[in-house]
Structures are given as C-alpha cells and as structure tokens.
Amino acid sequence: MSIDPIAKHRAFSVAPMMDWTDRHCRFFHRILTRQSILYTEMLTTGAILNGDRERLLAFDASEHPVALQIGGADTKELAIAAQIGASFGYNEINLNCGCPSDRVQSGAFGACLMREPKLVADCIKAMQDVVGVPVTVKCRLGVDDDDEQARLFEFVETVAAADCQVFIVHARKAWLKGLSPKQNRDVPPLNYPLVQQLKRERPDLTIILNGGISDLDTAVAEIAGGVDGVMLGRLAYQQPWLLAEVDPTFFQSLSPVKTPEQVIEKLLPYVEDRLTAGDRLQAIARHILGLFQGRPGARAFRRHLSENATKEYAGPEVIAAAAAMVDPSDERSAA
Ligand SMILES: Cc1cc2nc3c(=O)[nH]c(=O)nc-3n(C[C@H](O)[C@H](O)[C@H](O)COP(=O)(O)O)c2cc1C
Image (cartoon, rainbow, N blue to C red; front, top):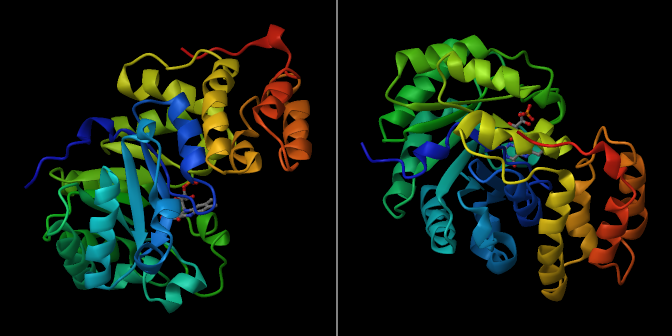
C-alpha cells in the first residue's frame, strides 16, 4: 500500500465539472481555500493525446493540490494520458467512472465502467505503473437496475485490489436510459448511508462522499459519520463565498480571505496576466458571478460583468467597477 501524499487535503474537494472547473475557475477557488483539492474538468484520453496540451492541461502553480480527471477506458491510452498529466505536475490522476452522457456511453467509459470493474482495475494498474502520484476513481453507486450495494461493493473490492486507495462516490446511481446528464445529477435518489457503510467495511480505503451536499453542516456531519471527506460541486460553483469557510471548518486553519472584496483584489493581477497571455476577460469573469451573493449590490455586480466582460477590449477595470457596485457597508467576513 502506497502513501497518499495529499492525504491531509482529502477532507474537502471541489468536484470536476465540465465547462466550469477550468483553470480560471480553479485559480479563483484557490483564493478562497488553500487546503481543498481542486479537480479539473474531465478530459478524454483522445483530447489529451491529440489536442493542444498546453491549452488543455497547463495551470497556475497556486492551484496545487490539483487533480486531473481523465475519461477513457483503453489501458494504453490512459497510461499515456496519465503520464502526460503527471508531467504537467498534477498531484493526482482521477478516472471518471460516473459520467452518464451519451457521448461518453458511446465511448463505453464514464458510468458504464461501473459494470466493468476488472477493466477499471486494469486501467488503474496501467496508470499507476507509469506515474508516481495517486490514481483514484470517481464513481456512482451503480447504473440502471443494479442493486446498489452489490454493484458498489463489488466494484470497489475489485478496483481496490489493483491498489486504488481513494474512491470518490457520487452517492446515487446513474440511469443510462431516459435521463439527461443534468437529470442524472438530481433524479436518482441519494444514498449516503451506503457510502458510510462502505467506509465501515473498508476502513483501509479513503472514501469521499459526493452528491447533493447542500451546506457545510451536512458535510461536517457526514465526515463525523465516518467518511474521510466530502466533494462539493454545484454549491461551491454557484455560491463560491462558501469556500472561504472551508479552511477553518475542515482544516483548522485560517481562511485565506476575510471578505469577497479581498478575493477581487487577489484576482486582479491574475486577470492582468491572463489577458496578456491571450485569454478573454469573459473566460474568467463568468466564474465569479456568484461571489457577492446575498449582499446589496450583488445583482448590479453580476449585471455589470455580464454586460461588459464580453466586450472586445474588456480588462480588469470591468471587474473592479463591478465590485465597486456592491455596498461596502455590508461586508461579509469569513471566520
Ligand atoms: C456542469 C457540470 C459538469 C460536470 N462535469 C463532470 C465531469 O467532467 N466529471 C465528473 O466526474 N463529474 C462531473 N459532474 C458531476 C459533479 O462532479 C458531481 O459529481 C455532481 O454535480 C454531484 O455533486 P454536487 O451535488 O455537489 O454538485 C458535473 C456536474 C456539473 C453540474
């Protein structure tokens, strides 16, 4: 059994979300929480092997610890993709065994892999053979009419035998027929107790609970219930200020920022750098729309960004002007 070099960060992570958790989003999230693990969007082996690697894989040094999520099911391609990912400096390689989209099903990876635990074990082994960082899995409880307990436990048993030690479990099945990917994040019922049971039966494994966590109190309670950590997706993205509470709540360390205004201050030099590197303001601004949620002026902030960040020569001043529309007398502060 190998040591997990980022074990002390496992209590909280931000989920891989396609089109959302790109490098700009992760940089922004990292201003709010120093300790959490941040996941990339899923990148397919095809994209990593054949695409513009610098554009797809490069990230800012401040993003560590950061995990690359890969989608694929071909052992050789996964090994090469993992090796490329590790060479970019990712701290973990994660295999997607939970995505239910049609595009993914036709490639027979993602959630379909819940029914191919031996293949997943081979994939994990192939990747572990070529990288020095942990290779982990993000999965569901099963697919379609599977018996959740039987499917999940058999899957984990088989994949753990290949020395995969970290399982992130989205605590619901994927229904591959009849539901869109979006519906598949809400409709199949959650089953946290089954994930807790998995941790009780396999205390040697690191088990991370994901899916539908609606506040930090729930996350704390689930960790108290046994699992090693939680992964939040939509809530973290839509209410990013909540991430300012993560370091004090889960890592006994001070929040890196006291106010959303400080977040903006820390973001602006990055915006400047990225625009110089050729990125568009909108690519960054779109991730920060929810930062001031609940504060008087939050709507004006959002509107100013939405109306101006897409303009051709839009620069950091657009973000600064938007932030100035928020009422400074109603400052929120983090613990
Ligand atoms: C817009 C969006 C894109 C997503 N893309 C991915 C992805 O690329 N890989 C993945 O494993 N899960 C993906 N997911 C699922 C999330 O990682 C997470 O498992 C799911 O949203 C449940 O967690 P939550 O209720 O905290 O959001 C995506 C979710 C959303 C909302």
